[in-house]
Amino acid sequence: MRNNSTQPLSRRRFLKLGGGLVGLGAAATLLPRAILKPESVEAGLRAQITEPNLHFAATDGWIHLPGANAPYHPDDMAPDGLTTYIFGFRNVTGLTRDQAFAQKMKAQLTAPTWWLDQGQDFTLKLTNLGLQIRPDLIDAHTLHFHGFRNAIPIFDGEPHSSVGVPIARDLTYFYRPHHPGTYLYHCHFEETEHVHMGMIGVVFVRPELNQTAGGKFAYNDVATEYDREFVLNMNEVWSLAHWCDSHVQLPEWSDYQPDLWLINGRAYPDTIAPAGGGTDPVTGDLIPPPGRSDLQYQPISSLIRCNSGDRVLLRFVNLGFTEHAMRLSGIPMRVVGKDATPLQGRGGNDLTYMTDTVHISPGESLDAIFVAPDVSSETRLLLHDRRYKYTGNPGMSGYGGQITEVHILPTSQPLPEQTEPNT
Image (cartoon, rainbow, N blue to C red; front, side, top):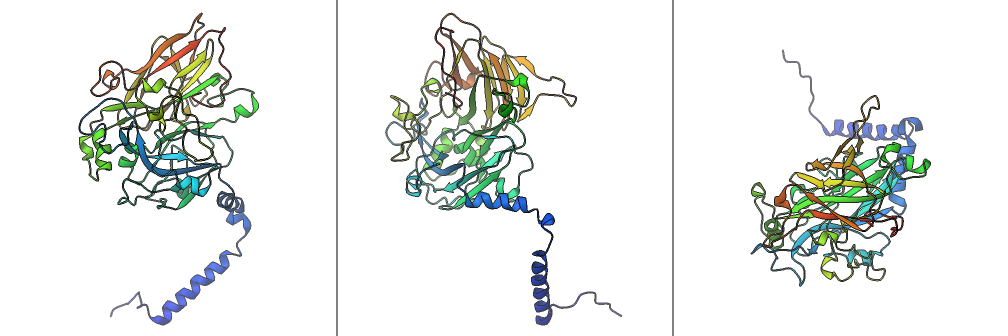
C-alpha cells in the first residue's frame, strides 16, 4: 500500500493558500510595536523623505595623465588637453536636477572625499547618469562603504545580494557609523572594471572624542590628536584597459600591466599642483586649479603643507590592485590605526609603532601621524613609493608616478588653521 504524503495543488487549495497568506499579512499589522522596532523603520523612512547629507552622481569622463604609451596613452578619442577615459563619481549636492544631469561625462578621479561623525545618522543619494561614451553599457552603479561593520544589505552597495542603481534612477543610502577610522568606498557593480576605471574614493568616520575634548583625533584616544590631515588615495592605471573601454573593446584582466601610478588621481609632479576651486554655482561643473585646466576633473591635491611642530595625520588608502610601500624621507611616522581599527590590544596596551615606510595592500587603509620638526626656513621632503618602478611616468625621464612632497613652514610663516582635509 502506498502512503501519499503530498497532495496535488488544486485550484481550491491554491485559493485557500492565498487566503492564508493574506491573513498572515493582516496579523502582522497587529504585532506589538516593540517587535516591529519602529525606531528602525522611522530611521529608514527619514532616509527617503528628507534631503540627503550628500548627493553623488555616477558617470564617465576624461582626465589628464602625463607621459605616453602608444597607441593607448594618450587616447586618440580624448578631447584636447586630456588623455584618459574614466568612470567616476561627482558630488552634485545642492545642484538642481538639470544641473546634476548636466554633469554627465564629467566624472572626477579620485572620487570626492567625505566624512561622518560617529553615532550620527547620515544619508547619501546616488544618481546614475549613464555613460556618454559607452551608451551600450547599461551598467548599474552602487556605492559600497568598504569596511563598514554589519551593514544593512540594502545600504551595503553590494549588488549581488542587494540592488544597484539603474540609469536615470536614484538610491539613498543610510548610515549610522559606530567605529571611527579611515575607510574606502567604490562601485561594486562589475567591480574589477568599475574600480579600475576610477569609481574609488575615501570616507572616514570622526570619533566622538572630537565633540567633547576640544581637539581633532583619529580615534577615541587622546594619543591620536592631530592638527592637520591629508588623504592619500593610491591606485594605478592600465592605459590599455581604459583605451579598450573608450573603444568598445574588452581587456583581458588576467594580463593586468599598469603603466601609470597615481596619488589622489594624479601622477607626480601634478600631485603637488593646487587643488581645484570647488563647484561653479551656475553650471554645477568643477572649477579647475589655477592655470591647470587639464586637471579640472582631478581636483584633489596631494601636497602636504604644515607648520613647524604640527601633528599631521596621513590617511593612506590603497584602492588599486598592487601593493605599495610609502616612505617619508627624513621624518618617522607613528602608525596608529589600520583598516579603521586603532592599534590597541584587548587590554588597551599600545600596539602603535614608529616607521619611515608604511606597507599597504589593495583594499587596506592605514593611519599614521608625524610631528613636523622645527625649521628656520621652508623645508621640503619627499613622500614616495619605495617601489621605484612606481615613481616614473611612461615615456618620460625623471621623477613621476606615486610621489608627493611635504612642505614644512617656519613659525614665522604660519599657515591658517585647516578647515578641510588636503587644504
